[in-house]
Each structure stands twice: as C-alpha cells, then as structure tokens.
Image 1 (cartoon, rainbow, N blue to C red):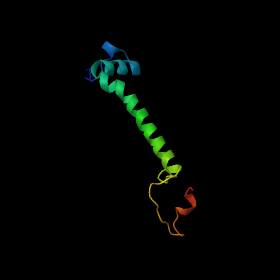
Image 2 (image 1 turned 180 degrees about the horizontal axis):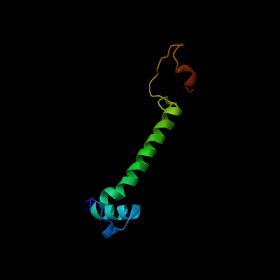
Image 3 (image 1 turned 90 degrees about the vertical axis):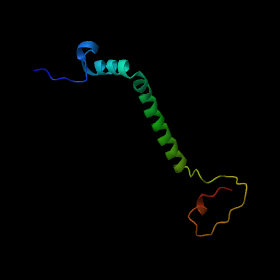
Image 4 (image 1 turned 180 degrees about the vertical axis):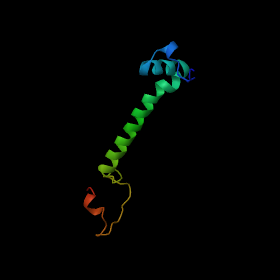
Length: 80
C-alpha cells in the first residue's frame, strides 16, 4: 500500500534538493521572496534595536524648546 504525499520525489528528486526544486516549480514567487523577507525582518529588528539603544528619540537639535524637570530620567541623556 503506497501512501500518497504532496511531495513528488520521482519527478524532482529526494531530500531537501527535491523539495526545493518542487517548490520552485509550483510556487516560484513565494520560494524566491521568502529569503528576502527573512533578511528584511532581521534588518528591521537590528535597526530598531540600535535606534532604541542609542536613545533614538532624543534629537540633538530641536525646533522648539522643551522643558524638563530635574528629576526626569531623560535629563542625563540630553545632548547640548
């Protein structure tokens, strides 16, 4: 008794190479774009982390004056 699967190793080959070849044949756009999406999400995560780590919302020169209380936790990070 043969079990029917969606994979077709007779036509595309066995293993990961065969799965990749079948994916390229059946859904090429998704197969090609998936690595770019993963890299893009990684870059977004990295730059968001860097932005928050470097106190990104604290601009050096503002167009209007902002008053801070002396006990505000942002006071040590203010740039002149």
